[in-house]
View 1 (cartoon, rainbow, N blue to C red):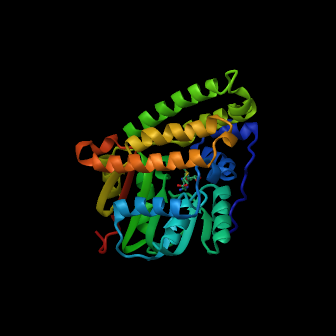
View 2 (cartoon, rainbow, N blue to C red):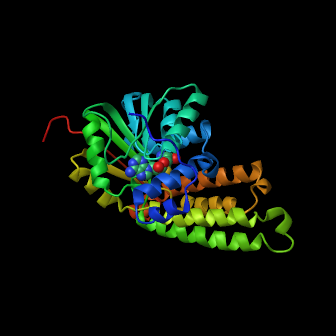
View 3 (tube, rainbow, N blue to C red):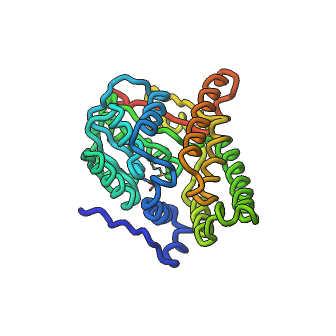
Length: 320
Ligand SMILES: C[S@@+](CC[C@H](N)C(=O)[O-])C[C@H]1O[C@@H](n2cnc3c(N)ncnc32)[C@H](O)[C@@H]1O
């Protein structure tokens, strides 16, 4: 059966229906986002993002068993995690899935540009279209907070994993981390959009009103697609209840998130042409230094205060 086609422009009636249907909202929102997603999140396929993806993976799952023979990604987006982990030498043969046809197409396009082949399918992580025992590794990045039944998604990951195979889910928002990040972002948006319209800055710094309105509409739909934040212990319990062995979680980014979210919001709030290479370096180096500080203060700070949570575990070698 052929995959559905991307649907980047939604009608008013579809958007209205999406308010009451979270899966439709995911498809409309992410098909629309697929066109600009890499720019919006500064995603690249070079050393900067390769090391970011590899470090998130290693922090929770270590470096054993590389390269994993056959891996499947759920909610692949434009391919950030799979393609950068492939470039890092973590993965061999790669399969990707996403509920949004536009995202699957974007991953395939990015893979083509890098000279790789990925098998991509449009699929819901709650019902994966693969046989039992098909993969050595299942990965996901910033995806399970979009999935209504997270425990069902873990059961599906375990079903398609071979006995002893591993799942690695990174970059999910913690409850407290998300609370702080959203407030910092909202305050930054409010301040930056107003300051950019003031007399001396208006010509060079303000973004056109229609672009700001579009960002606000996108932010409104975000409220429908972002379904969960996680407490690390509760997340681990969900994975264990689904049947996983050896489950453990890691949290990362405290001050780095307090810096990173306002920086990213500022970048969307003002004319991007004003922010050149120096700004990009300031943002990246600032985030790196604060991440190092966050690792240093790790023993003093409770896990759940950090912004990102990652979880890993394995498929039992013997049926329970
Ligand atoms: C925040 S994006 C993350 C994309 C990518 N993993 C990354 O880190 O850049 C979340 C992705 O999950 C997908 N998604 C949402 N609900 C899903 C579901 N039930 N099954 C599979 N993918 C889903 C969205 O279409 C979107 O591409």
